Image (cartoon, rainbow, N blue to C red; front, side):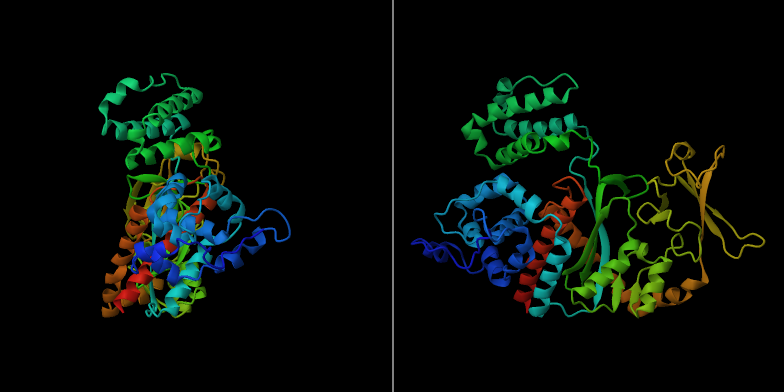
Length: 485
């Protein structure tokens, strides 16, 4: 049953909070800013209301996850800190002397209570609603971009994952006491996962017996991460990689294995919409969804600002139809009028190459000039024929015995004449200067809130991580904008 957190638990020590937590403390201000009772309404159907033991208050559990995102800590470390950090206890609605939860409760909350909830849209809409109420969103333009997140397990084998995390733990120990090398167990010399797990257990046992060393935060955090990997994530270690994650390309020569988060943000740097996809998905195809989600959240959209990935034909037609200015520079490689198999080949603007539906990128590009009967010159993209021969999608795409596989696109079409004129206007040039803002937002998500690497396996887990991270950065931004008013 839900145990509602209607008021602070009576305690003779609650006055401590007023003495030790200043009025400008971030967590005190977040408590004042947000009415967290919306959590009850959203999770109401996930609890039994007639029998069973009282569940831990869902608002408190939700706040634990928010703290975990704000401070980028593991479940164990965030619960440990809530034992002694008075600002944490205040934020969580606890009495100073009240005991904390078991860290495993957070895993159960994520899996049982948040499962099947569209947390991403719900939390973004809630933060935008607060921003509108506080009068900090006034602009009618949004900036769009995508940021990539590497899969937690990447493409390493289970043994390599454990080796990497045990290595980082040993390194942090050596920085404090190099003599510990002599006490550590011998490393595994086999390729068996069980042997590596056994080595990690022995290593952790030695370190845990050294109370002085485990008190150092840099050791304790890496020890907890290795422990969670060995104890809680055994089922994930049985697979070589995240099943949902896909290979995406940052440039022609560099790639990543993981996910993409496609973001829309107001001029005031409040994220108004987001979608999470696998890494190989095209940025431009998400534009329509981002615009519509932003509008559903309550934002007026008259202008959209993005890089060349968003200037493809469909987006130009969609924004024109909805009377929205699209400030996205035309790219001759993606702004063709008509091309065959548009749904099977997508342009990767970072690499400057097309990618087939199997996720294989073109290896070469050439330009064919105008010829008799052809109105426009075309780019021809060449694919690796060896990959085509064994591709599961080769039927209807690759002809058996062919010596090459190419894909051609028109460089320029009359459809883009109006957009080209708009591109030369002063308004376009002025608004395009604002695109840098979203790069800083992506950096904040990655390096302050751990969004550079997925914290769990699967697309659902990535969406949940995105929801909490975006909610956190939006609330912090709202507070900053309120201070500037």
